[in-house]
Image (cartoon, rainbow, N blue to C red; front, top):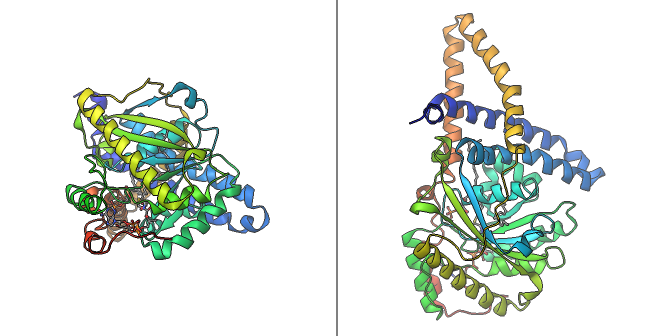
Length: 384
Ligand SMILES: CC/C=C\C/C=C\C/C=C\C/C=C\C/C=C\C/C=C\CCC(=O)SCCNC(=O)CCNC(=O)[C@H](O)C(C)(C)COP(=O)(O)OP(=O)(O)OC[C@H]1O[C@@H](n2cnc3c(N)ncnc32)[C@H](O)[C@@H]1OP(=O)(O)O
Ligand SMILES: CCCCCCCCCCCCCCCCCC(=O)OC[C@@H](O)COP(=O)(O)O
């Protein structure tokens, strides 16, 4: 193990990274809150400001992936589509199999200059995660309860609000609705069978309603769907803790640009289109398993220095006062102050560990573990 690798695996270094993330994140959340009155006066300016503030937070996680762990991200895509990435609004459809797939997504957002404004259809529970969830509130992220009866209006309304968004954005949709586990896969394939759909090997059966409502409400706003399929070399199952430990992974992303006009407007046809897309995605994963690569040429964008510069800025700003505080604390000699400070540090690290836990598949939700009973009993019907 090299010296640098040894350093990266040190708990103290990881503690410093987490401290900078936590302290800067809370400061940024506070600044975002301060923009509230501006929304009433100049909404577009408030949005632009929040895009930049959000960048300060999400780019720290990107910096951890790109600069700390040194993870490499390779893009397989058609060179003609490449020039459009980052220069138009798009709906991104991504497989949901890995704990850090969202972070790899963010890395590509960063490389194409849309990190601050990137959006997602996220489960409501994530809105309450400090820093990221609170940041998302000001970014107009679309939340869903994964209960169609409630989501059908709220999701459509939130999407419509994005029609005059002042910056280019990518809207991420995990159509599988939850992360892949063998049990969820088995259940979703029972649903596929009951619907007469072919079985998928590497994906859960996609939920079609969110996709349809997104496409319908972003017509005229987004130019295309970016069908994206992610995998990691050497059968790795990367984790956020691995990244913090400085472990290097190699991500491969295959992206196909599909103009939005090619997607059917009718709900049933749109659902059938999405099922076909997932069958194709499954075949790309099969190709990857057999050959170790995706089809098509590689046109990888290089990492940019901005995420690192942002992290260095916050570190300089926040580590100096921390050092002063520690010196003062030790020299005070007060046992009570030291014990209280230690308790605060412990609570903060437990909080960060809980946040990291949100990314862990084995702590994931039960969604997709139980719905088969209803859906197998009921014959499939039109849902509008
Ligand atoms: C160039 C580079 C390109 C790309 C770079 C890549 C990415 C970068 C882009 C952007 C990055 C931005 C941000 C990233 C940051 C962080 C993201 C982090 C995480 C957030 C992710 C989440 O929270 S995922 C969970 C929430 N999202 C979703 O659920 C979306 C999908 N779901 C839907 O669309 C649903 O339809 C719904 C949520 C709208 C409604 O949910 P509900 O449960 O009510 O679903 P349905 O009504 O669809 O369910 C009933 C139908 O489903 C059938 N059924 C029943 N059981 C199952 C089962 N187990 N599996 C499959 N289907 C099942 C049932 O039969 C019903 O069928 P119908 O025929 O009646 O439809
Ligand atoms: C600079 C680096 C510092 C790192 C230390 C702090 C890390 C804090 C990390 C907080 C991240 C919290 C939000 C990330 C989003 C999680 C994405 C995700 O994968 O969500 C799962 C859902 O899609 C589906 O849920 P399930 O139904 O599978 O359950």
